[in-house]
Structure formats: C-alpha cells, structure tokens
Length: 182
Image (cartoon, rainbow, N blue to C red; front, side, top):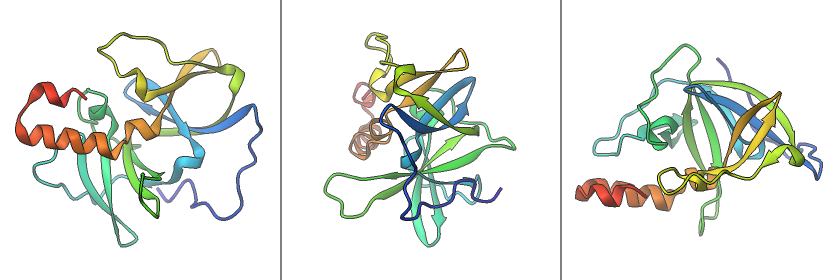
C-alpha cells in the first residue's frame, strides 16, 4: 500500500469557513476522524522497532525517510486492547507542532483501516458529550454527523500530547497506577 495521502506541498486545500475536511478511519467498531491538515501521509504497517520499557500504547518507532517516528497504538491509548494487526492495518503519520519546537514533530498512529476524506459542515458537528470522569472527553473535539451516524472527531493535539505521554511513561516507570490515569 503506497502512500495514500501525498505529502502536502505549498498548495493548501480549499476549505470553506463553515466546513472542514477530515480523514476518517476505523478503530475497533467505531469511526474516528482527524483534521486533514494534521495528516502528513498514510503508510502500510510494518518495520516497527519496539522500544523496551515503554507503556503499551507506545508500540515503537519506524524509520520514515531516515527519521525515527514514534508510533502510538490509539486503541491502547484509549484504554482498550492492543490493535490486532490485519490486512488493512496502517499507520497514519500526524504532523504535530510541539510547544517550543522550531519544526513540527511527526507521530504515527495505528488504525484498523483508513476510510475516506470527508467534508463535514460545522453545523453537523455536535460538541463533545459529557460522560463523567471515567472517560476522556477532552480527547474529543466533536461528534460529526455523517449519513445518519456519528463520527468521533478527535482533538489530536490532546490525544497525542507529548507532555502527557511523558508523564504516563514516568508514572509507569515508578509503578504508580493512580498516576497513570492521566
């Protein structure tokens, strides 16, 4: 599976004020979406180097054109089981601008399969529901209504917060289970 989403060049996608484009993907039985402007490319799953002593949601790193890119298992990050690899499993490379960093950081996320790029009008996006304290509602940017179903639009900056993941790594090293529920 070659790169399905080419690297961005200087031409920007045309986005109207009242809608945005999202890359949709499946994780388990749920449909999720991330803003297309955060997506650098999509690659076939493979050649992952595991790193010892990392929490379960950090699956390892890949070599992407000479750069080591960390790969996060979203299913595990959301508190579920590790993603079981299938024929359509792939890695979506997300470009993140980290606080204090001069250049953006690439982070890979493992997904069961990529679906399509959709334009979701702002009027069709509901605010994140209030679940209470046991579910991370701050990971959700909104709930997009597409063809009568909901697509969970992720707050990718929060899901892939490097600072928060560093806290989780430190907590797992200290063995403090209550501090791992960040």
